[in-house]
Amino acid sequence: MAESLSVNFSGPKSFSTKLKSKCKETLFPDDPFKQFRNEKHRAIKALQYFIPFFEWIPNYNLKLLRYDVLAGITITSLAIPQGISYAKLASIPPIIGLYSSFVPPLVYAVFGSSKHLAVGTVAACSLLIADTIGQKVPPKKDPTLYLHLVFTATFFTGIFQTALGFLRLGILVDFLSHSTITGFMGGTAIIICLQQLKGLFGLKHFTTKTDVVSVLHAVFSNRKEWRWESAVIGISFLIFLQFTRYLKNRKPKLFWVSAMAPMVTVVVGCLFAYFAHAEKHGIQIVGDLRKGINPPSIGYLNFKSEYLTVTVKAGIITALIALAEGIAIARSFAIMQNEQIDGNKEMIAFGLMNIVGSFTSCYLTTGPFSKTAVNFNAGCKTAMSNVVMSFCMMLVLLFLAPLFSYTPLVALSAIIMSAMFGLINYEEAILLFKVDKLDFSICMAAFLGVAFISMDIGLMLSVGLALLRTLIYVARPATCKLGKISDSNLYLDTEQYQHAQGFPGILILQLGSPIYFANCNYIRERVLRWIRDEQVLSNSKPDVIEHVLLDLSGVSTIDMTGIAAFREILRILEAKSIKVTSNN
Image (cartoon, rainbow, N blue to C red):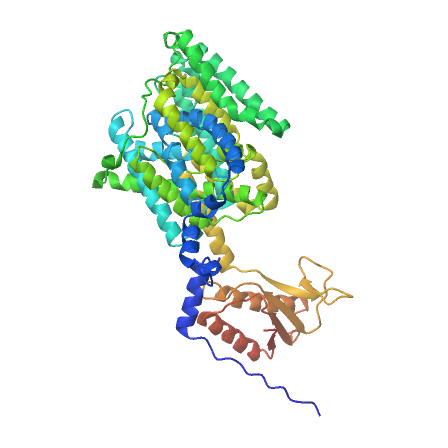
């Protein structure tokens, strides 16, 4: 006689236990505090966790310093021309761009978790700040107020980023999908390149709008201002910069040639402008760059109600873009070394460096790809390379800043255009088209919206389309009819595997998502339609289906509305003398 086996089922979890578990999985999916629960020196471990500087500095040595010094000096040579160029793009004094490579890198070296990320300004956020704040206060009309609003927007960026990190809300950044970022960066690169035609042709009058039509109209409507001298110099610099990038791609070991090229362009441009008296030939230069490190700017933050909306808007939008770009870049280079990056720590580090930056005459900074790639290829070992860059930038600010006042604007335009060409990732767009047409549509919504309407609208169009796709996936989950593959125990989708065979009188259906109020009506109608379709295929015999087997292995949760929908399905099928069975 077979021995009976009794199973003791555990009681249901209490509401508080379920709530605690859900909150933990939502806010702390990586369980960050597990690593020092059983440690004797919890305070030290906690300090090392929240301030990564104390984790790696005890083991730091001269051998590591040698690599970091070389990497720090190399990225400084890139930070100087990029700082001046991107400050020009943001319509703020060029010296602010240099200030932004002095203080923020020090803050990131203490709180950042990435060994390879190099801190600096980026083109997309620079233009977005200029576009958003410039609509309220044109930089040429009131440059002082405009600069103060830029500092205020940077402060809000830092507050928002820090709050996201502390509240463990990095999930919000995930709404900026890869397709959105690809399209946004491509569209931004196009309009930035077109805006540099002002410097390339030496134009004095130009539009404040950023869309392609307005920029091209401004370029061609001011043809009388075109200077052939400026165009020849700009194109020459651009060819030189592109050649160095080509050389780096052909021979990766020569990465330093491409890294030094922008600095060489600035130095050669300064010497040419000084000795050839370029201003007399219509070639504009940067102008006054005063000596000295960052002056305090905390007193310049403007929280007046009439400007609060625009500064908060600029701060939040640029915060999300800077986080998405910076964290993605940090993770990309960490993966190459088989390391992990804590996204929430990075948010806090970015936020703190922008808050401190707004107090010390800096504008928005993050982790630019070009500078981080140079830092990685130069052999950096820790975040000390950012400290070295900061120290080198301090020397530049104290002793060398006035030398760069002769930098031709056309040289900066060439540097920006060369950098932007690398952001137009057409190969990725082609891949998206081949793999997922809807992903491609999301990418093109960002690209065309940014290029032909405005940066913020283009971004919102793309994010909205991505959310709409997500809602469609939620409301219309995957369902399929299963059939058995001959000579095997596999049951697969009969539409994809047409040789899969069903069984007479039995309909096997697979549901592959959680069932709740948003999709239960669709699931009910879809199950009933499968049955009607089977009856049509079988010459409308009412009793062709005797059993319906539901594969619910992909259903992780179900709410009360879903349960009610299943009860209704059961009643309808029982009225038709059809039995329902589930594998769960």
